[in-house]
Length: 296
Image (cartoon, rainbow, N blue to C red):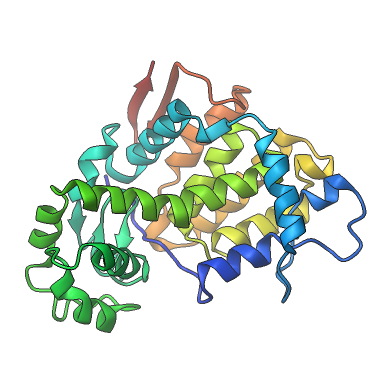
């Protein structure tokens, strides 16, 4: 079962958004405070020295979700909720209009013609592979961006599926997933003091809700959670903070007609959390949409 909704991207560029949310307060006087992203967006990004300090802090931490086996596990869990499969590599060729008002949904994390990320993917891919089978759709993709329109996209699904047979396009999807969703989510989770499970919870939220700064975007959800509980890097309980983050996320999904099924939280992420599996250890068993999935 495909998720009901698609990605909600912020109106500001991703790099600006990431910089804003890695900002520190002016009076952050301790190393712990410097390692924690600001709760509130502001005009100033971190200095290069502060970013370097964050890089050093992260480099000294366990790999967490970036470890190859954990990253593979993360893709499987996401795919179980996105496409009801553990074989996430079969979803490179996935494309359809699921009727959520975001146009065509396609690829490994549901890039959408209506939410700019699919356009960005095809534009970047075309720069290095100008003769690809999707390049001819760029003018139409620019016109339909931000809408649910299919105007000018006749034959697009077939072209997407054909291009997905090209290794370079699969690599391009991986790169877009990592730069827009996986890497920012995991980095911020580590700065918040979260372990492997928390890093996955941030990643899954980034995929479903998009990297938006509004109340229902990923960064907005994090702000709301931080207003109710301290992150571990602020001295709070990891389990309590994640429980509140999932509560807020679940409420947000229930308030949206296209996100009503919350089993990816209720019988998957919440189960891992209540089992105390903060390291996302395997073997792992969870349910999504009533279907049971297992990873040994």
